Structure formats: C-alpha cells, structure tokens
Length: 476
Image 1: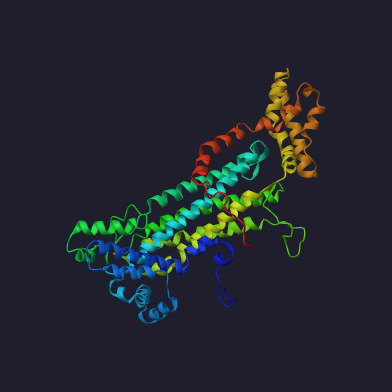
Image 2: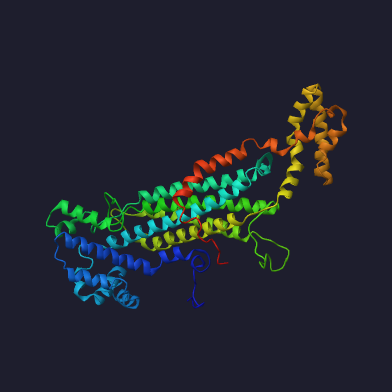
C-alpha cells in the first residue's frame, strides 16, 4: 500500500483500471523478461546448442520467484538492470546460471518484452473502445428520433436528433478502434537479432547455419503468439513503432476530448447531464451545483495523452545510427502513462455513456425558441401555395422576424414570431403548427442512426461480445 509520504501517480491510484496498471507493473515486466529468457533457452536447446533439459526445468520451476531486493542489490553494483535480474535469477537457478541470456543483448529481452506488453495494452484499449461504442450506440438508438437544436459555430442551426449527435461521437470511436486494431495486427516481434541487429552471436551459436538462426528466431516469436518479426533492426526495433502506437492513442484522446466537451456544453444548457450520484457533492461552497466532473476529468486526461504524442516522435528522431540510450528513460514514462491515461479516460466515457440523463422538455423548449426562424422558408412556401404573393410574404416574414428577434435580444422575452404570424391575416390559410413541427426538420437522422448501428456497430458487438458488459465503475 502507498505510504502517503512519496509521490504516487494518480493514473494508478485514482484513474486507470487495475488490469492496465498491473500490465505495466514491475512484476509483469520482469516476469516477461524471464519468459523471454526461458523461450530463448528452449529454442536454443532444440537448435542443438548445449543447453540441458535440467537447466530448462530449473528455469521453469523458478519462473515466478522474483527476488526484487536481490536484483536491486545487484543493480546497485552493476548499474545495469537487465544483468541485475540475470544474476538474481541465476542465484535461484544455479544450474542454469551460465545459459541465461545466451547470445542475447539487452534489447532481445527489453524490446521484445515492451512489444508484448504494448500489444496486450492495445488489446485492453480495444476492449474499452468497444465498450464505449456499444454504450453510445445504445444511447443513440434510444434517442434516434428525439429532435434537438443543432449547432454550427456554436450558433443555432438546423435541427438534428439527440441520437444522431450521439452517433457522431460513436463513429469517432469506431474510427479509433479501426486504428488500434490495425496497429495491434501490424505489431511485429523484434526477434533475436543480437547486439547491433546483425544476428552475429546467434550465427556463431548455430555454427554458421543461417537457416537455423531464422528457425530459432521464428520459434521464439511463436511462443509469444507473434507470426512475424521485424525484418531488420539496429540494436533496438525502430522507435517509430512506439511513436505510431502513441499517435493512435492520441487519436483516441481526440475523440474523448470532443465527446467530453460536448457533454459539458450540453450540461451547461441543461439538456443532457452526465451521471450524478445521490450523495455526490458538486461544489464545496455552492450546494446546488451539479458539475460535470467525470467529463472534466476525461478532458484533462485527454490533454495529457495529446501532449505525450510528440515525445515518442522526438525519441524516434533522436536515435543515432544503431541506437542511443536516451530513449530508455523517456520510454519508461511516456508509453505506460499514455496507455494508463487512455485506459482511464475510456473508462469514463463508458461510464458516462451508460448513465447519460436526457431532459426532453428542456430540449423541446430550446428548439421552440429557435425553430420559428428556421421554419420561415417552409411557411413562405406554404403561403405561396395557398395563393399569396411570394415577395409580399417575404417582406412580412422579414418584418415579423426582426420584431421577434428584438423582443428576444433586447427585452429578454420569448420568441413570439408564430404569434405575430397568426395575427397577420395573410397567413390564415397556413397551418403554422405543421410548418413548425420539429420532426419535419430532422431529415433522415433516425434512419441514419439505424444504418450506422447496423453497418458499423453490430460487427464490433459481435467481435467483442464477451467483454461488452465489463464494469466501468469509477474509483472517484
């Protein structure tokens, strides 16, 4: 447990899921190193390199016996974390001490472990994205036909529906899932390449047999479910891989930021609210407040991820020749934190989407206040169809509209345009109620929602059906 005396990352203690936090833990990292050493030893044994079954069995028995204190003592002396763990494991498996890390360089272990962990982290992100997509699609379906005022430039625009707007949010996350799945599928094992990527040490171990080296590498990769390895590397895999992955997380952050900000805007308008619990406190001073704290948190985390995107790009650009070590300290921070923050903000999106509260009467009231202006063209066409002169109608609507606008803007009154038109004899033959029915202004929005869910969401639901019901409860 945290001792409250030193800094503790809120990403772990408050925000991210336990699953993601454990994936980037020191125990997972070192156990993955050991699995790689074991896999390499097994492959070398099968390749005829002098490694005994007894040595392999000893490594298998002690795989999970990680003495972190012993490793720390070794690292203090050796100033090398990989070799510290080689020695610490060798103490527990003395018969195998001499074959741990045989032919390998640190990148064989560290890089391959990082790729394994990053692949698993991408899969967690994909599951959270699918959960958020499912929740937003359910919300969109429920409110597919509820008219609401649209906004462009944050100014009143043609009506849309609550469900159609939610489908816009949802589609951004569908795009993100496509990108995350693509990156996951394209992720290659670094493989066993040796000190500068030439595989010289493994060629020596394999007696100069190139085919045997390739089989050895492929076998190690298969043990970690990779069907391909990097075709060529320096000492490390190209740091562009990290940059591409973190850029994909930046895409997720962009979608989260858009969704969370939209909910915050709508909550300010009192049209839609994020969930608010019975005893939740909105403000320490203003007891009436219902602040959108979940979406505010998501926005802040999204900004963090967006700010982290440039760091791996710079790291990739800074790698000199076969590699430099200025990547390590940066990578240890940026990659885990980008994933932890992405995990945390997607938990929030799923939580909020599952609990969004809609206020149809407020939505209808705002729509009524603006719709008469938008309906004026329809009203004009109806009046002309009833026999009126188009130019005369246009002028009368212009005068009435401006008078109604003055009442709203200068007097703070309601929009009384329809009352003014009803009082004008020239409009007596026009059904003003029908001409201003909001449902006549939403076009194909309900059908668009249905088609989107059928074509894009349903396949995702089928692929991720086993994980869609995962809990999205928040720690705070």
